[in-house]
Amino acid sequence: MQKLDKLYEGKAKKLYATDDPDVLWVEYMNQATAGNGAKKAQIEGKGSLNNRITSVLFDLLAARGVDSHFVRRVSDTEQLVRAMDMYPLEIILRNTAAGSFAKRYGVEEGTELKQPILEFCYKSDDLGDPFINDDGIVALGLASKEELDEISRQARAVNDALRDIFSKIDVQLVDFKIEEGKTSDGTILLADEITPDTCRLWDLRDGSGQIEHLDKDLFRRDLGNIIPAYEEILDRLEALADAEGVARRVTLA
Ligand code: ADP
Ligand code: UDP
Image 1 (cartoon, helix red, strand yellow):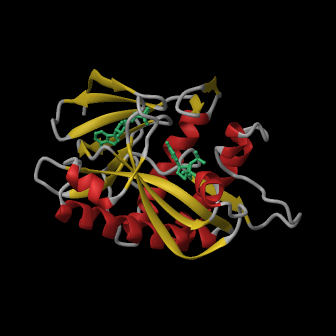
Image 2: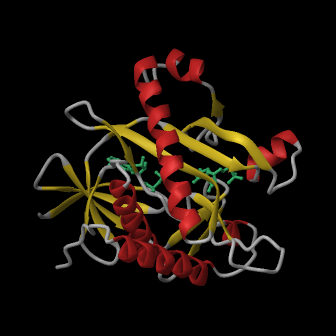
């Protein structure tokens, strides 16, 4: 597989074409951003950690019957994925009130929700990713009703599987964002990344009674260095994958 022209450079990743039109080469960068790019920093080691975390998570999800765009990891900072036509949606699942949800409804951060909440934002940096509901998505033609039903079903299945995974490593899965896309043959699949950049993860091994963030809130809220936290998440996930004998998709050059 050859890495060809760069197709896109986002805030956290670069996408390259390959000699297979159905496969993209993704490079995870060290850049961290928050507030739609208002806050920005280069954090040595972040690209490698996120590439490895999302890879092991896609393997753990596959072992639980949840498919994704992930093909295989090819280096510390790079992986191959199936090329998708992306829905311009940030698909958010919440199990515990935090962040913008806690603020919007005046609920204390950490309040358990009686059921998971599926939310959508219209992915647009210019508009600041505004909230959108199901009718809005269909009315604007961002996805058809049938596609949205499938996206929603998959998002809830991802939440169920991720909750199982994180509970096994003593981490509370507070909320997360995923993206979905469609392959050239019309298959709707989980895409993009699942990392501490896109999830709120609270440590349940910490006995202090304080919230111990193992995610990008450390950076967003100036609470500390993200690297030891991301390393902790990777170590626990790798140990779980080993213990479960999960098949790992990796071919290093
Ligand atoms: P952003 O675009 O928000 O700055 P990134 O730097 O993470 O974010 O860029 C990655 C881009 O790649 C995102 O726009 C995402 O929608 C897109 N993407 C993720 N997975 C795939 C895929 N399998 N095929 C095509 N595009 C993808
Ligand atoms: N999230 C993300 N990218 C975004 C917005 C949110 O990955 O552009 C994730 C975020 O890490 C959190 C969840 O989605 O796990 C819910 O975020 P929220 O809506 O509370 O927004 P925030 O408080 O981060 O602005």
